[in-house]
Image 1 (cartoon, rainbow, N blue to C red):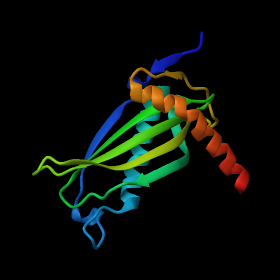
Image 2 (image 1 turned 180 degrees about the vertical axis):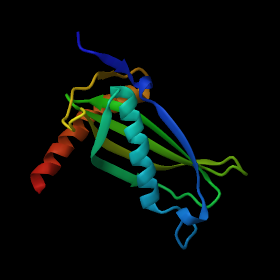
Image 3 (image 1 turned 90 degrees about the vertical axis):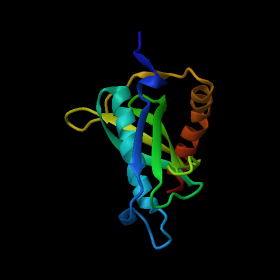
Image 4 (image 1 turned 135 degrees about the vertical axis):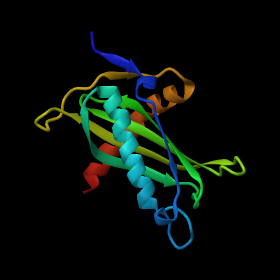
Length: 157
């Protein structure tokens, strides 16, 4: 029988404080800083799911929906939404929270593809994923379309 784990095994949450060096002249966080946080948490999530070292194969999409400003707390949440033979699709949500007002806003959503590798850096098989919640099932089901998009994008080059 093939090994499979529930999505909750990979769920990873981090909180970061937006500080002045993280921001641009508008006092909002640099998109590149957010991308760095997204890549890091996606790797952690994929490592938890696969019990393996992983590498980033692609950042498939990043949607910046709103900004975070100095003093906001960024909460990042990542889960493995689907798997291939050696790859894992990871979904990351980023929220900003004003700790003084309590207002929480979705700022960024992203999908990444991570690949598990062995000690020689060669791709290795990963466990399947079992979605349980409605959101997990929706993301799992729609992952087929995102995978097709990735394949089509490769043809454009």
